[in-house]
Image (tube, rainbow, N blue to C red; front, side):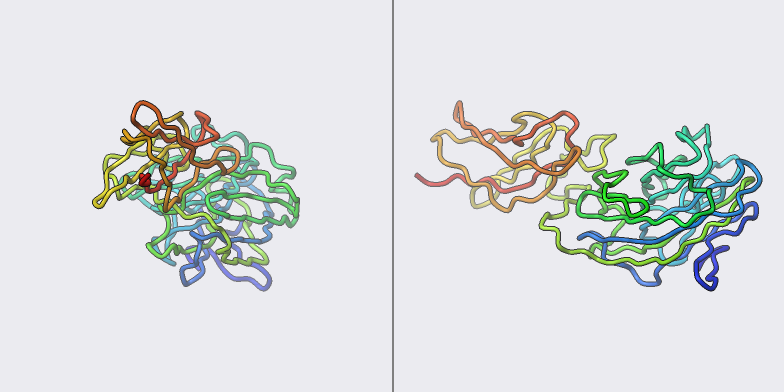
Length: 330
């Protein structure tokens, strides 16, 4: 428990309905998250008062700063950097990802309403900003968060898709690709917990029945946001998953090529193949996603070269495939 958070008889109260509160609650040990996980919990927001009435919301957060991490007051939700004119000081949680249940509309942050959910991410200390980058959001919820009732939430991560379900519904209200490499350590672990905050508007933020399970059933292989093998690869801005602007093929010692194949452009990379030999794609891993994650590598040989592409190319695709291309002997 950090800040104003406290354990009551049947719940964790992150903040009471008082102004200028910030609280957090974390598992004391890191959790395995990169291979997949599922979180279920119930929440209840009561006694909304002050500005709004009621503010500012709570968040489920993954981070690597430690079990005493806490962010700023007000619109920062207890995880973000916050408005520096109102709450000065660098108090955000760097290298964090938050599913933010925002209960107050901040016009300067371009919030869509006072009843929405956003998936937010914060970079390193020097790159943090307010408001944090939003990877996806739900503008309209099927209920009012401040109605005083208990609501159920399920958050499921099957790499690289993070999906959000509300009140036991079978269909996700939000599903978006997310790269967790920025918030995990080398073993794919991160601290998991909740944050909440109030400002001039305030309310009780209560978490009930919290359960978290690791899920390593995914057959996909995670791709790091920063491709270490080829320093010349840069991720495009405005994409949740690392999406290289151009494809790259680099010759490997002993023969063959190592290929980075982005999923948003047609036939972006090729290797020399003057004899027209068959080409084997080996050690394939990565993601190419839009509304879902699918696709496979296809090839064509012409003009003494073999070209590579993703079979379901779309300009809005995110991610890339990484593999070895080996020329087979006749």
